[in-house]
Structures are given as C-alpha cells and as structure tokens.
Image 1 (cartoon, rainbow, N blue to C red):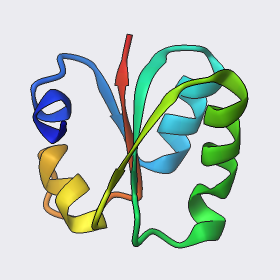
Image 2: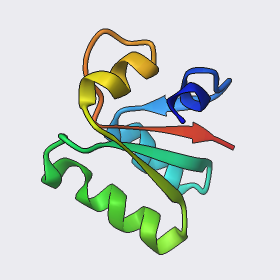
Image 3: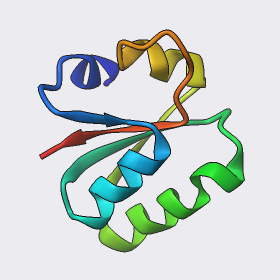
Length: 81
C-alpha cells in the first residue's frame, strides 16, 4: 500500500496539507501514522470518517515519511485524486 503513495503523481505530506485536501474533496486515500500524537490526527480521522475517505494506518511516522520521500517523520499524507 505504501508503494501506491511512493508512486503517486500528486500527494500531500503533513496533517495541515492533508486536512485541506480532504476538506476540498481532493484526497482519495489518507495515510495516518499509528504513532502520531492523537491530538494531531484526531480531526483528520473524524473528517475522513464523515466524508467516507479510505484511511490506511502505517506503523510509524518514520515509515510514512520515507514513503513520501522525506527524511523526517510524517503524521499523515494523502494521495490526491
């Protein structure tokens, strides 16, 4: 599943950008790190549930960051439609 994110031509990285994409109905799949602080991703999770957007949980922020091609951890990311 992370390969889909790695190879996606358009994606967001980070909770603020991902939240904006979900609000604008631009995200097709949202990836959330399981070790991210809950207060950081709780609003994003709730919005995804409300809008019926698929959520994929990744074990660590480090793994998610690497899949996004960055050298730091990421709490969330999304593939844009």
